[in-house]
Image (cartoon, rainbow, N blue to C red; front, top):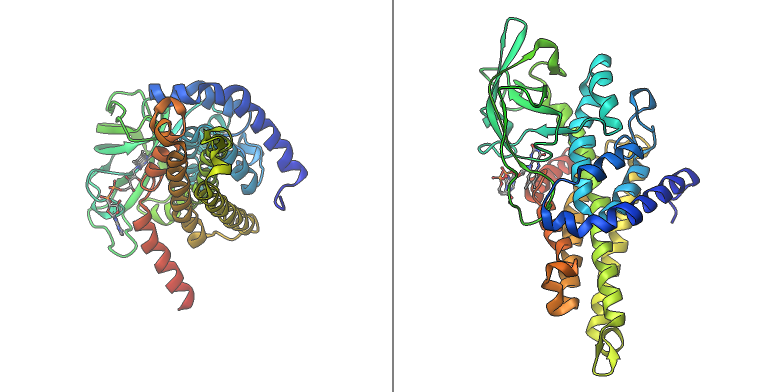
Length: 385
Ligand SMILES: Cc1cc2nc3c(=O)[nH]c(=O)nc-3n(C[C@H](O)[C@H](O)[C@H](O)COP(=O)(O)OP(=O)(O)OC[C@H]3O[C@@H](n4cnc5c(N)ncnc54)[C@H](O)[C@@H]3O)c2cc1C
């Protein structure tokens, strides 16, 4: 592949070993038990995979974004939900700390997170408001040297296991409607009174991602736990969320490849009327060729976009496009893979249907593809203006 360099190959080789020896034996178990794979998460930290792009001075490896994409793609082929936990930790929460944090905050929160010593979560979504944070009701009010937080966040990944939450809260009585100025982010340690974590939701897919509510009741954090500018965090969130949307490209590529590999192997093995399905049915061969074609198109889009990102482009529109295209391709390929398996494809123990369940959730978690399409449209129009 044109994007593989010696350095990237070296990291990819260690990711492959990790996946083969440690992730694959537990993949079905994680899906069945719906338990956060803390052991695998910590191992990813030990291997440097939680801080691949974090600068060495803050405990990371200092690799480029393409290397991170390769690692995520490889893991997603076998256990997509592990990349969800990694993304919420390293890209959503960690990305904001890296972008907005002071040197002291980075030392305190980013260094242990980069090695997996601590787990991070990002708490933005509320029951009302969707992607319009101006409607959020979680408030932070300054009282002396402390901020007092009240409110409830829903559908937050990594709950329960997180040591620190990056929380989005309203800090102004009046929010400027265009820029939504008046919203801030805070670093909130878990496990203290005033922070209540709900039970993980039972979801269609992403089993093991520990997604649920976090409620703050008169919860006090020191003044210095404000992350970034008072009332002005949303611009940074827009840029930092792009890293998460970008990562949806390689993750969904991995999901599609995992489902495709299973379907191809099954078609070459399953006998129908004296021949394998692959040899017997033209429709089977054509399905596989279309799946292969979609995967290769997505691969080209993913790695050319990451090359742009590594050249310094923020990829605000392309990053979001990776999430949209990735969702389409992974859902399509995973759905066809189940079809090629026939009846056993619907059986959980076969291990193929979970790719579709995970792909489906990925079209919503983090941001729905519909909401992203409107943002992309706006960015395209801006470019023409
Ligand atoms: C498994 C999972 C994990 C998650 N993890 C986190 C997390 O770690 N942190 C966090 O803060 N949030 C998290 N979320 C929340 C997630 O980001 C939101 O669910 C998502 O942004 C959609 O918002 P909503 O659920 O409020 O749906 P709504 O905003 O109510 O949207 C419902 C539907 O309306 C349509 N729609 C909404 N807005 C628009 C728009 N602007 N343009 C066009 N159509 C639109 C879409 O079809 C959308 O699916 C997670 C969600 C899931 C499912």
